[in-house]
Image 1: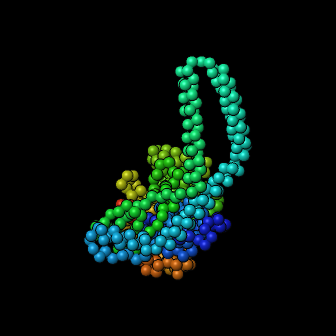
Image 2 (image 1 turned 120 degrees about the vertical axis):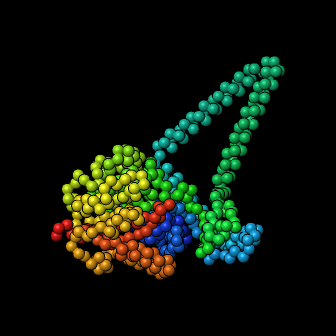
Image 3 (image 1 turned 90 degrees about the vertical axis):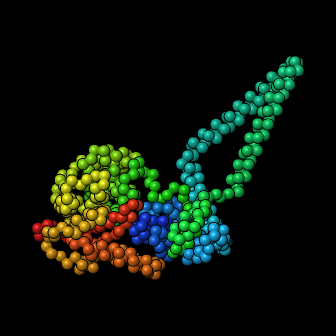
Length: 476
């Protein structure tokens, strides 16, 4: 993922403190992304949330791909003690939590207001520059309408003068009509003036909600925005109404978009490369990859007609039909020459909705066949897939898998980026230890050497993202 220089200069001058929610296990991906895309500093995380400081504007913040939702941080602190089961006393403690430091609220709302005003100015300027001719035509139409209205009023006045001798009832009726017209005009002017005044005031409104977990959730519920747990208290303002994870360009959702993007970010996709998803389903992985890395040749294969139709609809909706080629083919008999693909990214079905039909060993062997030496495979595996692959016999030349990983970028390097001081050391060590344990349990599969592993949550179940590198051609 390429950083965008200069995109952060138009935001808050001193930088603002934000936090994003993330699916469990995606925190390392989000930390890397905010550093790369937003040039963020003071990056740290707790489970399910990543905190950072950036000068980026709303347009850049909207581009985050591995986050669920974005918040402007007001306060983050240790949890307060629940000294009583009384809801009233707990409410008073929550009130103190939010009211003890009004300056933090004022600062956060001021930053939020500046972000929104800057975004509105950019939109207005863009519309102004894009439609100068349309604006001129509209101005001419307004002038013509005003002239026509004046002429109609003059004619009406002449008619009224000629009808002065008519009976009194008609005169009264006309007077009533004129009065109603004047009142309507007066009400319209008042509405316009009120709207202008409202716009000048720049009033801000936002939704407030609360989510509780841990011991406090058993005794208290509320309708304000505070994240409370047994570990921390976080208060923030949601920046966008729609979650960042909701992709406008995906018509029918398949795999979670944040997971698909995270897998693509591991694949080392380069311009001009050939990227394949041999079990593409609805094409979510290919869509996420093509949006981020456009100068690449993408292919998707699947045996299901319904899945390919859904993928085709998604490609059309995203405007990527010409960027991604779809073909009906079996993952164990791909119609591709050996060593013809640079990168393979795939979500292997867990067997609940779509059965594999063949053992996963044959699927991985076919992927290994079409992958070039030095190429990358990124797979989303279930726990069952992981156990089956682990039990498979190694059919390649014996490799020192532990040694091969230490000489290459692995999970330890990725999970502990350069700015180690900004990361909570206990949390970082926990992530690294957990993922390294998964990596150590997985031996090489033929010429495919595992180099990174991440345990992620899919909601009701967990899964493993494995990254492999092809070290040599089979048989050598």
